[in-house]
Image (cartoon, rainbow, N blue to C red; front, side, top):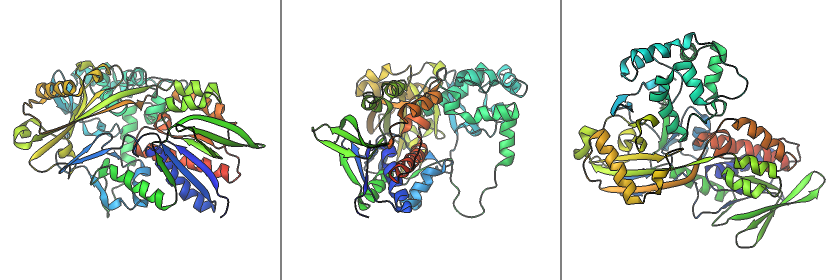
Length: 484
């Protein structure tokens, strides 16, 4: 096991850490000795996964959960010994709401996570007029669209279900996931399943019904997972467990270490050496590099190597958002809160994108005499509000909660978290650009990209993509030919 091969991962968010973990795992299985280093320009690990514990309050500054239906998140938790720390959403109060006409309406459960299962609850929601419901039902006779080219989410769902269903229900759900503008977002890159249903069944409604019939029965034993899961003491524990395990495995973790430039030199025919120029003026040489940085950061590093790749990466836009968490005395807001939270359609013209009653949705997030709420602002076309200072931002959020929910009380705890250029946007043509990007980088063996900017923005997506990146690194360092 002498003379280990070397890899440097740039970026210490969940993508970079998961990649390092998967490299250790896959290298061990391949009998390959790899010396792995992870560089993070900031002062802490985990990227947008940040948990703040203040007394008995557990507030997430970034994501507060992940999808259990995508297995990579649960599998990583199991490997790190965190399975017994996983928690489901609370059993009671599972309802969610959507704002329409200044009033909150219950959202049909089958659409809360945008998983195609049921549409019947629309009939009882009051969200759509009879004309809107009838137009939605025409999905069963609307002809299939072409599977060629790309189509925006807005175009697809208006074509299938009509403008009313799109504006009042589907658009705010998508905005809540991507903080984006559905007019610009690629269907193929974000929700390809709906295109598959249309092509296979000729109708989304028929496809939903077929998917429901094919759904396997719930396991007779074990603890079934709700659609979204979290960790008992916050998702920050996932980052802590990862960094602890990586350190134990001999991975070098370096914070406050920014990469200013990337240079390439020939190592041997078909092989390369990569020189990372660091912000302290030193250089780090390695056989393989994984860029787990936002696309716009990777663009600057790669442009001197390949202007085409740099230009393609620069074409992936990012949206800025903010979260405002506030705690209230339970007896002051008990009559004003219901369910897990609400989403706000763009056409309502409000400041909020969404709000989550965190302590009602998750156990162990606040003491019994407190209610913790988390509000979301910003996103594509709504980023101007982020220029307000913290006091002004909180005042705007409180005015929204007062108008929409009747909450007049003073919060006992407040925190504001801003995420500048944090949410990648999969705009029209995204997948084609990724194909071109792979081609532009194909001559640089051992140079791999991973992260939320490419093939999924959720935590399980980043973990899965990190494992794919790790496989490319291990194959390359083992001397196998691999394509990106």
